[in-house]
Every structure is written in C-alpha cells, then in structure tokens.
Image (cartoon, rainbow, N blue to C red; front, side, top):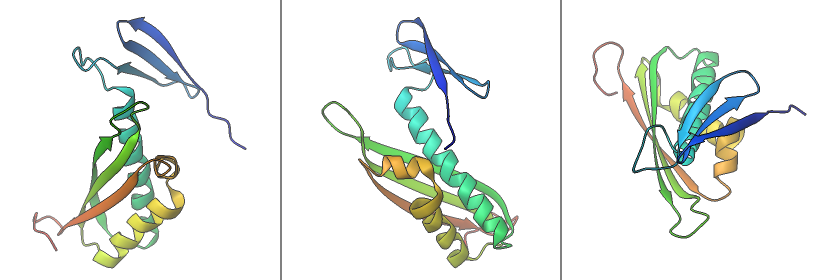
Length: 143
C-alpha cells in the first residue's frame, strides 16, 4: 500500500501553505473575499481535472491516437449545507488532433470508471458527467 503525505501551515487570515511529501508546495486561501489563491475545493476540482486528463492522454497514447492537445474544464455544484461537498461535477474534454471520437469517448469512460482515483472519491458525493469536443489537427475545426 502506497502512502501519501501532506501538511498545511497556517500563514494568516484563511491562507495556508501546503506541502507534499514529494517536496512540492501550494498556497490555499479559503477566503473568497481575499481570493489570493485557490480554495481547497477548487484544488479538489483541479485535481480531478488533472487526474482524468493524465489517464485520457495515457489511454489515447496506448491506442495510438495522435492527440496533440488536451484541456479538461470542470464545473462543480456544492451542497447548500455543511459539509458543502460537491453534488454535481461537469467535465468538458477538449481534444485536438486526428483522434477518433470512439477512442476518445472510451478513454474518458475508462478514466472515470476505472483509473481516476480522484473521480472515485468525488463520486461518493457527486454525479460526474462528461462532454467531449474534438478539434481537427491544426485547423481548429471540430470533427
């Protein structure tokens, strides 16, 4: 079993400096009025986007699909009462390159259902939906 470690140190107000066991740091600011850094739930949404993007790129590469760019955009709704967990997450995948639609859809589905650890955790409180926008190679048109 792999162990992951992290710590946060309060700096001021509602701002914290997070550090990972691998030696990286990130600033968190829970104050949306001050808004000097992403809040913790924004970081969770970014982590979900990064996790699934990593999977999709890897799966497309294994399927020999020539993706040249990938952007994952996330939008989440939160519960009205504490704990204000995510209740719904919409992910939009924009993939550029000569990628077959079925291959891209399969990669997204595999990420969401099998590989993405962050999605597995978020799904305990939220419904995750995905949309796909394919862009042809080099010309900016959809396919």
